[in-house]
Length: 563
Image 1 (spheres, helix red, strand yellow):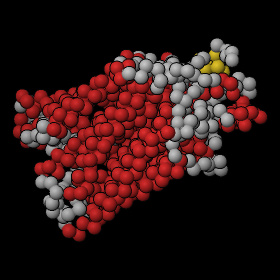
Image 2 (cartoon, helix red, strand yellow):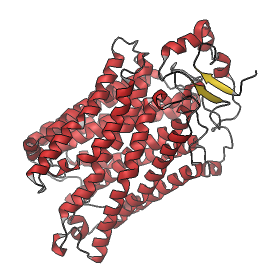
Image 3 (cartoon, one colour):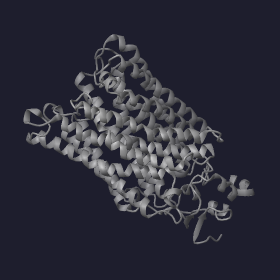
Image 4 (spheres, one colour):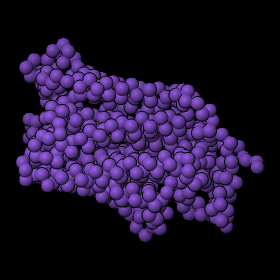
């Protein structure tokens, strides 16, 4: 079968069935199967899988700490662990989940795998730097796990001073240095994505023909390049003050603890968006495919990602309404916090409009997308409560904040992470998973999540402070419900892990495009060849153009079904 030097995507006769179906004898799975070849690979797809394995292990470690906390909270009094151990449990849970799962989860796994495929590139711009980023990530995770096994950390994941700089006797410096090291991995990956998206797009793939996933990942990468150094220098200053007793943050030494909060939240509030922007990117891919419509308001959705990235740098002060900032500063940050909800709302409205009158199919990825939209909307709306000065004073540092944060981060990012793997799994593995188990898993996760965290809104409003192992007896029933929900949620997380691993070996062959999607990643084999495409794609249609796809397939749909 002869192919042209370039495969054209668009036009009635450019993309042929033969092009899609051409067999590829070597791909990243069956070429050089030795372990050493994986550890020294520069193939972005393999590196994405290395990140997937590492991040999944870290996710379950962090989840174990959460399980221990929920079991301890079954009783109003300490019965399972001591107060000191409980402090270490929630600290290590937060550190591992934030820096070693939520921030790298989608970009370093799915992003690494699909970004070059989606833009028609053979690999990322800097393949060796990509591999180095994984090793640096593993080094940072190793240092943090070392702190865990040496006794843990009890400061909370925020490392608030002066407790972290002078009073805590735990392994603060080791944990901080683990996060510091992993920050280099984040910057390496982000720079790689930015350079790749700028310089390696296929011919004809202009900015406004890019999938929304690429827009969101680009905005996310820019934020991480700008804000990660701020966290790095802040943690270095904590270590310097702790070791050399230099007065930076500790008032006893002439320092200012509020300065630490300004520096930490200048990083950490944009980091909240870097956790959820990749999730939004995934949903922006899934919704059009399973609605069989182009995404509604493409330009608005694309620029809303940029808007979130820009405004996210201006709202860090809403974490400090009770920390002594001036009333005028608090009013400004409150207003900006309401304003940042606008680009997020644009995405939610446009996803909904995309589904309206669409040919919606309720496959597993779509169930996760619908779950994301519902949970993220609840999280976003309760965020407006926390942006209100008077109400924030009442619920600050209560379980209301925990519930809000988890509805965004877990209800958003984790739902999107699972949706992404179910959506791109046929492309990653070349196999199909059991659809019935997939749908069951999505529903279990949604039910378990709401049962776990919705009672915590009530607990917070009633005054239950976070980070306490003991509590008044009248709160016990809500904690029991929350722990029961966490158990269901754990089952929902383990189930996909089991059937996805099973499907890797025993699943039915997926074919190149089981979802009938329009993206470039679906125009190559599953799994993709080592260099992604046999020929360089040329794009001359907009993203999500299902009408053009129908014209291309024409009367050969039956052939396509048999590929």
